[in-house]
Image (cartoon, rainbow, N blue to C red; front, top):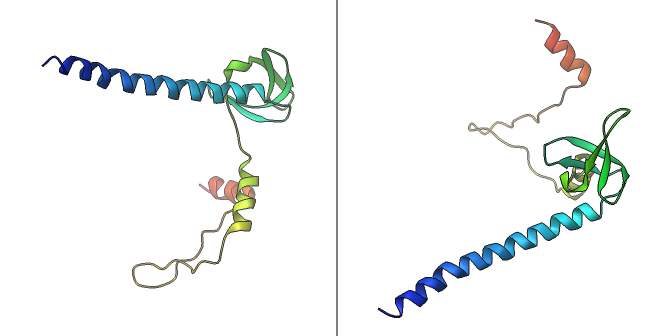
Length: 128
């Protein structure tokens, strides 16, 4: 019975210790990301605002949120640096291998989805 109390303490303290270590690691990653920001980076703030870094200071970041609209934010407000999806898509296309077309339940080949242009989308939406 006297062995139960120390085991209970260990069982409660070990997960707390591991959780604190994980939080410190994540905080260090975020701080490193905020310290390595550079002009031209596309970022997301903690409030969900998308912008492009225009200028940097020790404690602030100037973000262009629309054409010719620049706002000033604390560096700590930057949550993440966005990855350019076109670059990632181009790299993925270069690395893909040939795959047979998909087939439906009856074995017939399913046509690939075709993206429509902006003009086609506008025409489709204004027909009604």
